[in-house]
Image (cartoon, rainbow, N blue to C red):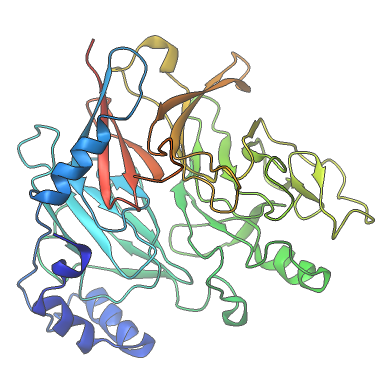
Length: 418
């Protein structure tokens, strides 16, 4: 079944009922007041069997993993991007760069999804890429220019209407005039301080100098944080080009994040980044540095900010490092405990493609990065064709990990079974 085959009449009718920002806001107000929206109750699910599933399973036979690990198809999820696993039920909520969040349910806990369907279809969304849970089970969805919270998403997702509340209103995450199709996918996390952290990518490859003051003030090209109700917003980290993956180290509470670096400088420079923020207010070098310590042409003659924090790990140039997690499970061997799994989406502008794999970074006793190695690869063929493009990594309660793939429209599960 293709992606065009899963647009049932009920969803089309629901979309027609809310065809613009004003209508979407009206539905959000209704959901916030625990009122129905009139969206049809019948929600079509995504078929999990058939030729597409079989083709993906064949492609997974190509994937190389360390000894004792295996990879299987967990679910067919169109446009699957970032994932958030419900702390109580294990339902996986999956963001996209389009208009939909998916709810993926494994009811019998055999570690294969039984049901995939749209989440909160009565609410129109715009690039709801970023999804994250608080420890008490509130689901936050970071869209292109709005943040919404669903207090009981795990338990009331069966119908189209789900209690939803505004955290950041439409058009208030960034100035509307700075909205762009480029680098508009957000990610979010709830920090150890119980605040909401959201990344805001730069709209440009390298921004013009006249934009720097505005971006510095708003937090574009940085990571912002706020109270869970949207109050007390501040810029936590600056000097970031486009971070689409972050997580907190549970041991020392530091914030780690990936960053995608400047295009057009050549195949092998600048490097991608895995960064560590140890306190608020740090600057990570962009746009004076295009990646690592490589200076950009546009800013090579101007002085960088003092005390720039350089990356913990320099990744292969243009591999497109995206989602990441700290591994807190017990299923995998001890060498993986406390380390970082991160997804490389794969290059788009390199003469010889690179990426489309899952990386692992171990940490030293002092909490800094130690070694980085390839953990899973094979989605890029010998003919330089992608059969998949990993986006994000999430962890299930049993200690296995999930890998999303927006190219194949799938989620994979990697388990250790020596």
